[in-house]
Length: 419
Image 1 (tube, rainbow, N blue to C red):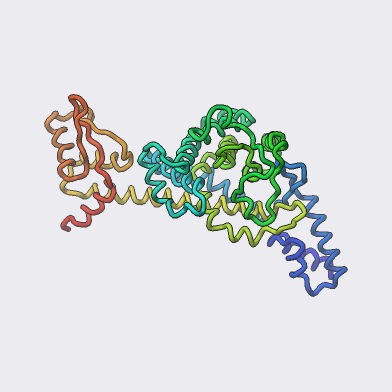
Image 2: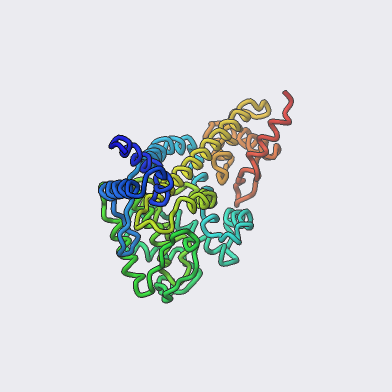
């Protein structure tokens, strides 16, 4: 084999990342000594270029920044800091509502076990109604959703053990009392979790090692390695905590919340809204094929799968935002050409569509357009008569709110309107 052929072979094995077993299958024509020499050269080159990472354990872990990993990190940076920011700005006043709905969907996906997935729609409906949780699962969903809403505030302080304890208290609210919520686990063999079903899963540390392991993990994440992308540190934090299962009670969502706090602190707030749990459900089988059972500490396959999963989640989020913007523009166009509405009523409905919880008052409408009280009242009552709005008494004032399913009503009435 010429040096040029060897270089081509090693380059191909690194671009389409191959571990030793796969490398052997690709190099069947070579005799055993040549194959062994080629693998030694590739392994040596990878370790020279590798980045050391930590999973909170003392064993060395590393990954090679392959062209594929660098490609996905570049795509994520462009999407999270460019297109995503622009897309969210296009939502205008509806940005907060869209963010809230995204967090609700992710909270349900995080907290439901595979056996409970059939109840997804029921739990999501419960969360949107804002009623008190009745079951442990509903309490977990409410706690995770409330915690995720506090990520920007939590990210304004250092990510340390105090922050971990605060997040744990928020996630365990209503599930335990006092200091019991932040008690480290007492069993050497913790309860089963999703991570146990993964190929090559790590053995959870013993109970006495939980606190020092968690401290090492947090310290490693806070060491700003200039050569490693913040997202890589985030992955290590996430899977370290997921495998560690540090607390005795209710740490569902702890790893995800700490990951989001870290990414928010690193300048990636858009990642908070991505539907990563829903994406991972569909990519588990692919991960299982890529992840070898024994890789001698090489995490490159995992990192490749993880960064691509984040990109898929961000791309899914971007498509959802684009679809919402398109729908809003379509509805506003329908209202604009509705001859039964005047321009003031179209403005009211446009705001009601963007902000479903908005309230409208006759006096405010009167002052906004400098019109007579009777005209302002006719505008709002006219929308009630058409089924677009609801009205109730609050003391001496009338309060107008959007009718349930306003978007659907606008669409249906537009379809039925004579051309």
